[in-house]
Image (cartoon, rainbow, N blue to C red):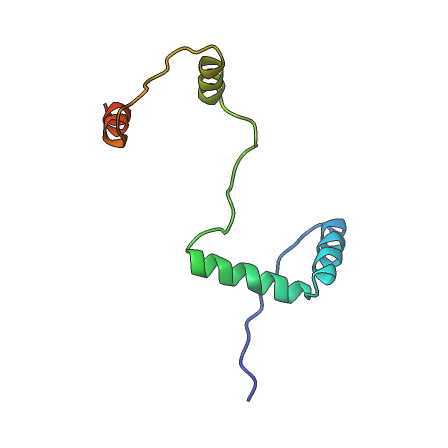
Length: 91
């Protein structure tokens, strides 16, 4: 006896659907199979299986840390042991 299925409907732009179908077809998958893989990954991970970010651009704090490192400011160490380094990080 076939396993019962449920239907999920979603609205996407036609050009996005076409590109999605092109990619999944090249991977040897149907669109439905690809979506089922995504759903299984969400369940397995208990979350979205990729990072959700606003952009890939570093934020102001990261830029400051990068500038500090390049100009050898606000550096710590060298450390004699891992424990000493962790103590400094957690201070």
